[in-house]
Image: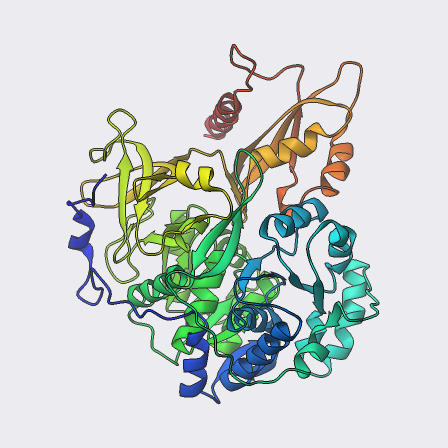
Length: 568
């Protein structure tokens, strides 16, 4: 397939947004070097009252890079980062890149089986993790190729006296107190960093060819796959983001870092954009509406990328009326559909702009959005970003579909991934010529606005997290009393969707929701655990015995319609 010649979305571009950008071909970490030279004394981040300047962030990243080199990390080696939003997460990310490594972002909520798979698939040599998650890492260490573990705690970068108080709060809230004996392969992050040199490292890195990141995404069939993103993929998407937010001023914005950096959405729209533009990040390790409201009011936050659940959580908090949110200029919402009432109410309170965007891990991640200062259509994912083409693949002709015709959304652009790590067959199956097949079903209207109508891959999005039914089902099938299982997403007013599991018990066996909740909690991250269960004698199937997931989804939709009808 060739380039799409008709691009009706261009008619909506304001004069400030170029149709094509002359991209700077640079490494991702060069952004940090440049901003540290331009704004050395400017605050790069604020972490619960502890500030760090751009010069301090740059020096810390170089110290970590030199230390990583000293323990054998070479260009192209994989360094896993399993951290919540903290200064250490930013230092580790850029430090690994300065060392020439490929970052492997790892969700701190992962349980042992998920950690083991990701470490083995990526071949990571080093992991930087929180003390809270170290016990999980330790259990699978001998099953991986990890040679060094660098451990840090939230307290390590807290201001006095919070750094002294926090360990007691952590012990009370989590019941976990980690006492470690450090050695040649198990390192304290702070001690490890302090031994490092802040000398620059001279490495030949080709931004268009060399990988910066392996970002893992689940699949509906088979295990999670590592998405290969080059330095250029990520810097391009950051520059596109900059152009779309043309009213934001270099060096003058304050960004709320509530989206997790281990997710590509938060990594690009919060961390990488802030580093490129010299913004100040207000880093929040966890999304707590009360703390977020305080942070916006106190720090006069101007940019707040988020997910619908975040905005809903703030709007529904009883303290919102006691905080001034009028500093907010712009918010791009992603990860799930943005309800109209949420958009309207949030804009009314903040006087800023909140619009919906769309993207995937494979597109670094943003491909489209509604215009912050221009035309937008509620329910639409907006229009393609500069140099980004979208088309809808007609199931009938295998060519671009006509306006309003539903098909699979395809994406082409410089932010599209190189492919899947060590999975050439999966990579080939995901591309049609040089078009990336998103797996999302949708259509384009006559004006060039795009809409998602279904998810081809049956992915569930709960609270901004991508959840894949097959992974949940495989765990449920491991329970000795489960004969059949099927997981689907059902509408949830707060999380967007929540997981519901349909269970057929083995004959003569009895299972309770409590049994399954305790069992799944041992094998799945908390956000993947089903919140609803329904026990049945049988599940709908095809003639060859395949469970009809879509029938269950339709049944749930019909139940909701009946409830809505009864309430009228």
